[in-house]
Length: 283
Picture (cartoon, one colour):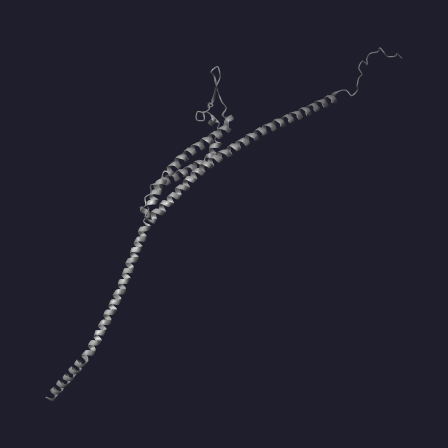
């Protein structure tokens, strides 16, 4: 009985203390809850700011990529024209290497038949006489002129091809300029600008190649003129040397013949009419 009373008294005291402490605990709990809410709101606000910044950066990156564009999707028909012309230029260079072989292989017949676009009569490989008979010309006598003719014909063909190539390339420029004007991304701008620059460079290269061909022709002409002068001078000198040689040979032969005649004659001399007796005093 006494034990039960003690237990009841302890329970009463605990309950009283718990009730007495509950307002303080409530304040503490509320403060903790408010602090937690504040921290949570602060963290959420920070996360939201980071998310907004990430979205801005993502949008900015997307805008940059859109402005840059995709070079693989930029289709320029002028590029194919440019590639084809560069291939032609490579072939033209290969043909230029064979120029010296063509000149060395000149036979002289290349000078026959050309009438300079009909402006002058051509020279045929045969000569027709008044009686109707014909004779073949000697092509070797026309080799110098034939070499020049072959070179000038090659230069004329190169000039014609150059004009066609330049015209084709220049026809691409208006379209490229329109694409450059309408471009909205960096890839298109850069690709069009590169194509324009390469086109201009190719046109300049074509013109330079024609100029070089003309210079090569001028050099060949001067070389052939100089060689003709050397040949003429060589023939003149050979003629003079041969004439001098013949004169010296004749002089030496005459001197040798005179010496032989003197050596074979009698050393005693006979006076003319020595055998006649008239006009002499008798002893």
